[in-house]
Image (cartoon, rainbow over all chains, first blue to last red; front, side, top):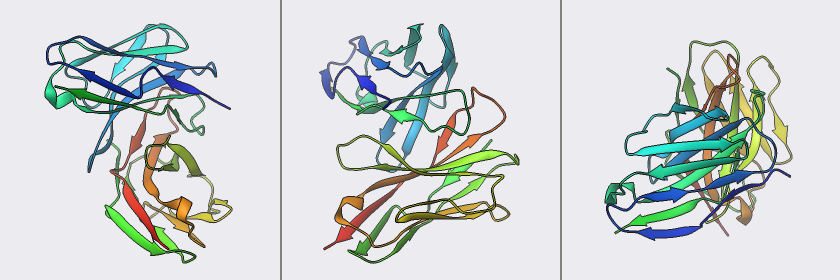
Length: 113
Length: 116
């Protein structure tokens, strides 16, 4: 089975801190994704990566950056955390084959105080 | 740009009965894939069912089936013999067939509750 592991289930940080969310997948997937999930808004794509060191902006990239130095690891960085970034963050991975679904991690519930 | 719309924020069904969740999408492409994902409370999102747009036959997975109407751009999910474990958020999703780097576009979700 594909396993996507997010480093934390719950995280509490303070405004202005630099926050790192880590995601690792074990299926040699080319594509990796970061979403945030908010009630009534569904999943909104922040960034995605289709190869090592490659990244593409999603729908809401402002205030975030990403890093993909190795194929299995995709990190989301909040440069200077703000309260409006309090949310559930989901990482996903998929193969390049379009008929294949995304596989999700358990999510990180991030609270910015 | 493609969009996915789920017009039912919440649905409720009696245990053992059938429920249908609606999804419509907008695209100018002819080749694509559609998915339904399930997210139980505090648990991981998992794939329920997928449909290739080039296939006319509706996909079925045990108690889950879809009604895919390509011309109408509609992709509803039917859950038969509902069980308590079906309670979850359900997301409809679209993925283009034109690029291996294509992203998946999700709807806003439908929260399904099951009445015992």
